[in-house]
Image 1: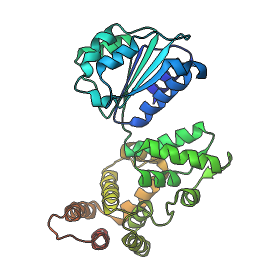
Image 2 (image 1 turned 30 degrees about the horizontal axis):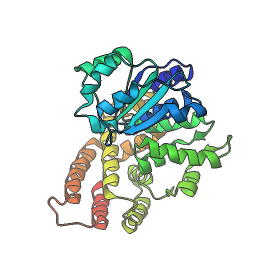
Image 3 (image 1 turned 180 degrees about the vertical axis):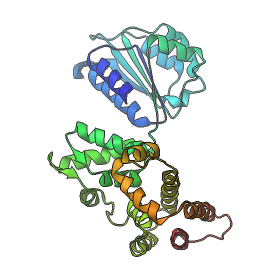
Image 4 (image 1 turned 120 degrees about the vertical axis):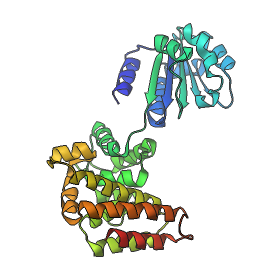
Length: 333
């Protein structure tokens, strides 16, 4: 995110704001900015007297303001970090008088995760005027692979698109979890080597052959034998392969395939842009479009919606994951 880079750059150059209000649904960037401030503003010797951490569950606005108004000891600044500040949401507007006239020698950092300030209120406008507002937004699933590629690029590493897709399927859009796994991989992969599905399987434990990514590909190719093997594997390992993840991915695939049929321009660049997929995977849709007509896809999507309801106990009496997977297999083929 460009906003993160700009904030990090200004902090590294010593251009500080008296208030950093970090809010939004993606905790990864909030944690990274907070960590950068905590490690950059003060020297190790200065931190003992001039850096403190408060927690939203255990503090209040008066205590935060009281600490923020203190003067630093033998340093140019003091840093006050308020973690879990979202727990102060009912009284957060009481911070407005301080935000309107913040202490210039204090850097107050508020980590307001999973919530946002009301833009119409005075506090938002005061921080916008005197401090730094940052909203950390969740990435869509189709954006995470590119995020992985860029993050690894910064570490001097590369990753194959399939390996990236496996990580997203296994870890979802939790950037903190993904970052932790990438840190591990960066330690074991040589700079001139690409992170492959084999490496993902070896060091993270995700099967390169038995996963939803491979199931989707087998369905697109109408490879009954391969799809059957994967579904049997899922039936035997239900905890590692929850049905809700499988049906969501297959439903997304057929929805995108229906979109693909409706395109007049089937060039890889346009398909990638419209469907929000990596160009590497366009070939899968080209193959699947030959195997499934628009009429067939519409029926499959209807069947998948019905099966999703059954998985939630509606219209069926507690079907096992094995039975749900077998029905999924029957519906798509």
